[in-house]
Image (cartoon, rainbow, N blue to C red):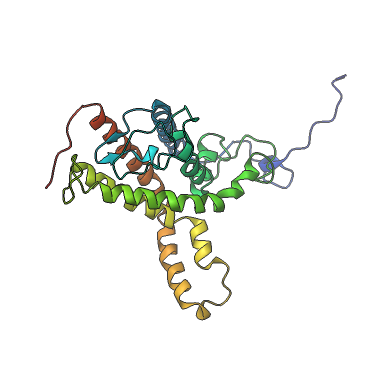
Length: 273
């Protein structure tokens, strides 16, 4: 029973006895909160849009375009796509949207991504909200406990992201057909899909796990000149990982929205040739 005479709890974190006794929460005078607030708004917008489209189970194919949210289509209830990614691995027992079968892999890849961890740790968990701004949590355990220990699965999600990116590349090649499946044509959607797949591969190749695979464990670069060259290329991409993460997130949503508008008859695909 509390008596009011208990000793005060020892201060921890930035308020620990070894830290400077500064009463102010932080000394920043700029609008430091704009970055985490903008990040939260952007991520929430994508979460809301992708959730709606993933459960919609409709308007995801308008020949020759298939939404990247539904590719590859792994259930029997998929729309028939001529020469498209209909793999039908789950048969007829799967009655929900087929997008739920495939989105778990790119979602897991991005959710455990080093950049996205920083983004949503700061914007949603304020851990910490910004540089030189203390977080409100009294203790810090890092990623050593559940559920954050599962972040270590990022390298395995990287391996699943590779075949997904390869299939999206195949889908992009198929966009060089017209709505009658004749080759040698190009529409506005083709340009969108080409930009998207370049950004998808850029984001995937700039991943920290990819950089580690290329040369992270090498002790003597001189003995592995090819891997050293690859490591150098990936390292330069890695410096743009944040920009590629956002650009590819926007482009994949833009491709899905474009297919949705075509499938609902909002407009017809403008042909370039």
